[in-house]
Every structure is written in C-alpha cells, then in structure tokens.
Length: 128
Image 1 (cartoon, rainbow, N blue to C red):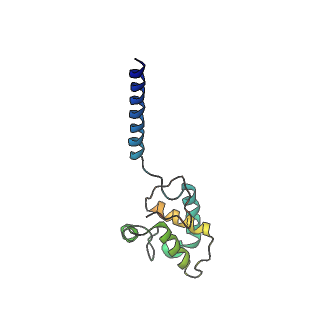
Image 2: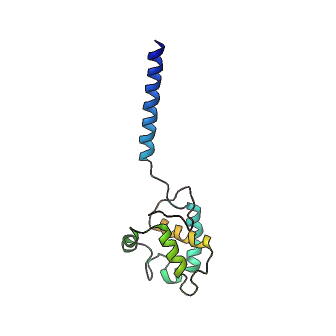
Image 3: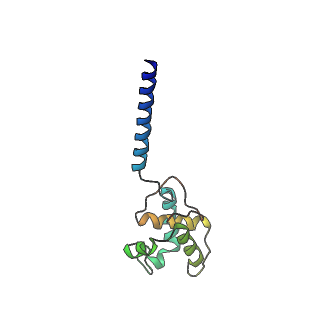
C-alpha cells in the first residue's frame, strides 16, 4: 500500500513537472532590453537622432518598418549597438555614453515591436 501511495505521489509530481515545462515553453521569452531603457532611449533618441531619422524613425535612413527589420534579421543587437555607436551621431560618432547608445537601441527595438524583458541591454548583449 505504501509503495502504491509513493508511486502515485511520484506520478503526480512528474505530471506537474512536465506541465510546468510545457507551460514555460509556451511563455514568450523576455526581450533583450527593459521597458525603462526604451523610455530613456526615446528621450535620448529625440535629442540626438530625430533630426535626421525623424520622430517616426522613418527619416534617412529609416530605423523602422519592413525594410529596416528585413535588413536586421540576420544581425544581432550587438551589431546594431556597435554600428550606431561607431557612426552616430553623424557629426560626433561615439560621442554619447554607452548607456545612451544602449537605451537608443532599446527604443529602436521597442518601436519595431520587439518585446521588452527583465534584463537591460548592454554593449555586449548579443541577441539575434
């Protein structure tokens, strides 16, 4: 009788554990930046980028939309961070803080419907 009770308990635990794995597998993974970063990134973007790229990110070159998204499908957040840091603002490449560059990338990702997550984006974040 004790063996049956332990077996039943073990079976219930295994079922619960399997259900948890399945449920967690269905949950969307957190994005590569935080919502707070994107909020701060919007302010940094407006101050440093919007004059060329537009408030709607559709200036020259656009930072939103299908063309932009298609061009970045095979590249990572680290690639985007490094490109922006090394080339922007056009009149002062590398002139912003690491934090501002990371926040601007977070804002660009948010604007392009990439979900936020619990972990801040950093210069070494490498999500493709």
